[in-house]
Image 1 (cartoon, rainbow, N blue to C red):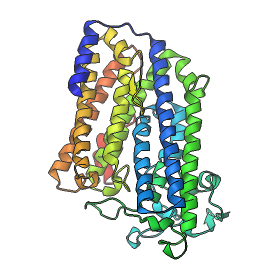
Image 2: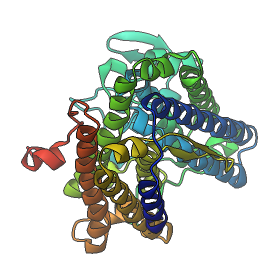
Image 3: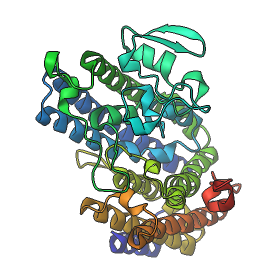
Image 4: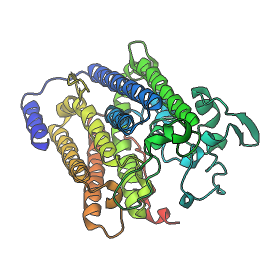
Length: 417
């Protein structure tokens, strides 16, 4: 990957193609539309697999639903670079990708999970087991589990962010169940019989569990349909970035830097390593965190290079930030491209190790030198590329951006206070 990107960069710098700011931002919007369309199409495949699981709960249909969920994460994670710098996306993102979550809000949990806490009185509310609920002193009729109930009454209930009732991670929990392996081998192991009928039902309330899974998946599809519309011609998100080219460029660079630094390097990677906590995995039920990290990084790289490979193999491409920066300072453009390629190499090494059986939660274990090295190589790469993003911003004559930070990077002592 790195050699290809560097070679391409060298060729472009040798024969630079003039890039137009407006065209760069337009391509950014086109890539957003394509990524959200791919997220929607894969979510619809997940929706179909969930329907089959509910209608015919077997090991095979459960495995198919899990595979569809994993596939849906590939394009979605590449959209996260749009969250920072685009208020429309950031205001919406919590509906579909909120994390971490107190899963006891949704369904049964192991006794080791504990009970309600001072921080969250609803930590073991168990919506699936209880058709009548009390939230913040208000009675809620949950006899019918619908998308409206999940999004309107339960998501972030009592104004607590970890009360996640909707989105990818709620669906992930309903498919995999809790991962009770700590730093050991294995993901969640929910049985297909948790969706069975009659005497075959395990976990209790199998019909309501199916209703919840269906409602959450239907809601994910409708939320993604809404976001696709925002990036189509005439959509509000597209209009926000294309209406003023410099503002659009700042949105692009803000997304790249904030995701790279505070969100991914800090909150999603270094913090978990500092705490040695397997619960700090992003996709903690499925052990898919290595892929989430990889595709987050790829999302940053493809915004700078102005190219996105769609799930059908076609490519969306056009004028790029690389081209704009190269016109101003070829050395900065080359350095940032090299940094992005190195980060993808480091994230690729982490992903390859996990694909070979060395799961991310195992990497987080205290004293695991190989795991720490894999994670910190990627963290260091993300931090380094952020500094190059800052230099690129200056080269373009734009105001310096204050990227999202993280105590794990900026004030490590505060993590343990």
